[in-house]
Image 1 (tube, rainbow, N blue to C red):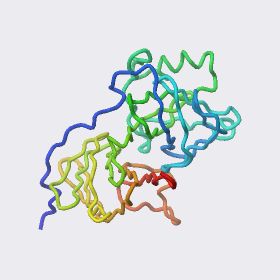
Image 2: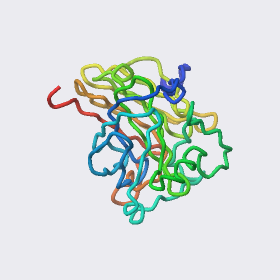
Image 3: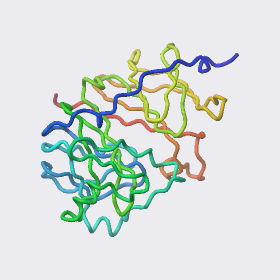
Image 4: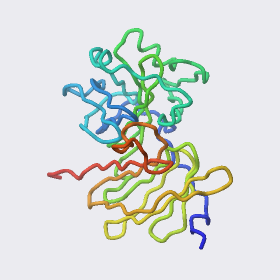
Length: 274
């Protein structure tokens, strides 16, 4: 019997928050996530008065508070940069996501594809050498996830995900396709969703569970990868991210990987004292 993943339907593109009109200032909780190896010694400007934090590989770590311009600056302690230099990425690196859309408004970076560093970031780094990334935060969002992947010249590329409760309600799961090929995701007995790279959709669990299967497109064929169950607790914001990575994070003890594509689940726990 053919899998029902072959009955595919198109879905609307996830609206990218970087395309929103830039507000004069924003206030939000921020989580930095490394899209690869841990990134130590990070801080954000302005607004965060805590010690430097480490963006953990494919997982949430320490929440930061931000209040300031829509274009948030991310610094890295020079000492951390010496001990953990940025590993320059290349087009052959399957872990690195496609670069985010250019910044809008005053920080628009209309650089050519061969530009080593975006003009806006390069300009700011002249007077601010510890600056390693810029992230444009969406208007009116109270919560964001920022994925950091290696960029050129000791910088990082930032992809911003709007996790405001209006976009990702507590107790629900958002599915992302950050792999380089289309995927088909089938869950909860519904018709399959076909997701192009960088598309996503939100799932409502049933009895705190999401029963799913997914496949990826290889040329003109669909190849099924896995089926499983994800649990989502009340009040929890959960994100299931499908990607293609050679990072050691996904290796077993004997160096093998489970499947052609990889997946991570980011879980933002409900507050202990809401």
